[in-house]
Length: 414
Image 1 (cartoon, rainbow, N blue to C red):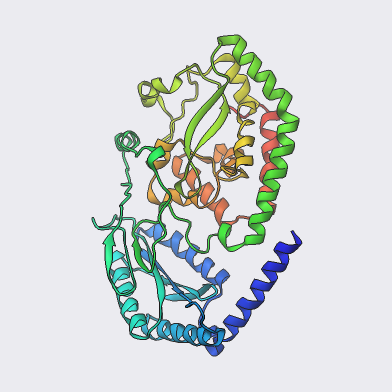
Image 2 (image 1 turned 90 degrees about the horizontal axis):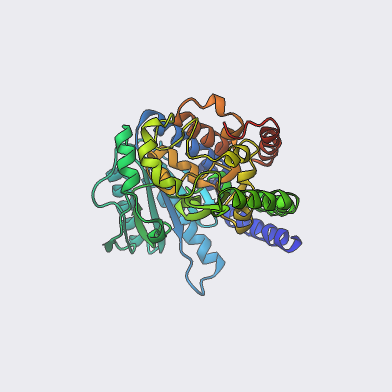
């Protein structure tokens, strides 16, 4: 722990020295925290008004054997180039050492591509070796040629495109769910090298999300997850074993239910729960979809006929969720975070919903303790996004305390 703090302090000192070498230019750039705040604000504004924007990241690649003095000189050249050749209205900030972000407000995909091409030519002419990465947020969709990568000279090759069309009608949710790609074949979004365009930010954690910009907070949250899940499994072990025995005794089927869910950054994982429904209950979901009282892609029936008698008790007391502590230990989930949706439901979500994938999914979140306030699926998603925007230790502890009351009052199955 102390070695980690020393390393972080040393890296912070070097970063301060590198930034100090920028001189007066430093005043014209936002700090990483300020840029993060502007990015989140623009994200919300763009989603609400259905307008596009682009995020361009520019990283100076240091050459082997290059002295720090020479590198700092190239860094100043790069910053001068950005300040002179971008609009005044474009927010520019420091993301990390020798890495900068440019927020291109009200800019569609083609506009972002034009900026990327221009900077690629300018940096090449200045003899600077950089990595350019463009991320596009466009609620109205994208062109057919979405993902490209290549080198800074402009040589590009077509990349694999992964596209999720938004759907507004119930039949489209079903169509999207049925046509979702096989999670076993899914890969995490590729990191583009040198010069690239990523036309969907659905599956990406944008630079500056709370989870990424606060390394100390991230380590602390993970530490609490490990400690809480370990203690929870020890305390809940007898209850889980008793529930397993009762499930086996009542219908002889498997005690555990496994399902593919979509986790952080779109990574699929297998969630573990105590089985509360009849065996092969998912086979009957298509027949019951018309009875779902939840709009959007989520499937929920108030009196689901597939739930067993034992299952009703397990759901009301939240005992069925306890095996997910194993998912927390494995790193698939956190104690607190947006609830992970089944793979096909998550892939059918609208683009703005999918910002919930910026962080690890959790056992509980705002929606679990305020279900009555989420009338629509969009309300639920807004609660998750509000949690992400206000991410912090105090909020997590408050939600954990509120969640403890849910099984005590028997409201877990609501």
